Image 1: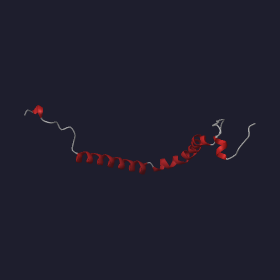
Image 2: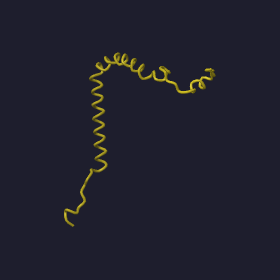
Image 3: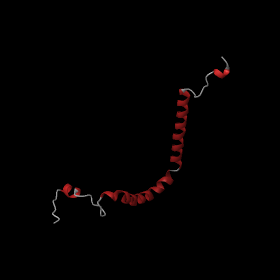
Image 4: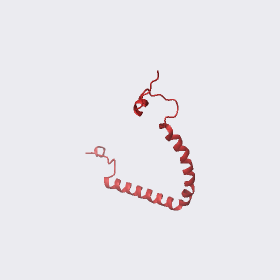
Amino acid sequence: MTDAHKPLETAPSTNVQRLGWFVFWGFCVIAALFLFYEHTMHVLGVLPFLLLLACPLMHLFMHHGHGHGAHQHGDAGNSASGKETDHA
């Protein structure tokens, strides 16, 4: 058998892959903790502005279910409320 017919190793073993992912996620956790501890005051300083920004965003995205506008969906509204109206 020649060297051309030997199988190639295409991927590292499973244990090495697990170790690599463990090191990667460990680095991510350490980086996140470092950023949190070093920049806590910057983040806390922005919170009041985020609260003020949340008010118009909630108004914009949450008012679609109040029935505002001229949308007519047949007689579904009359039968749901239990009221019978005579349009004649």
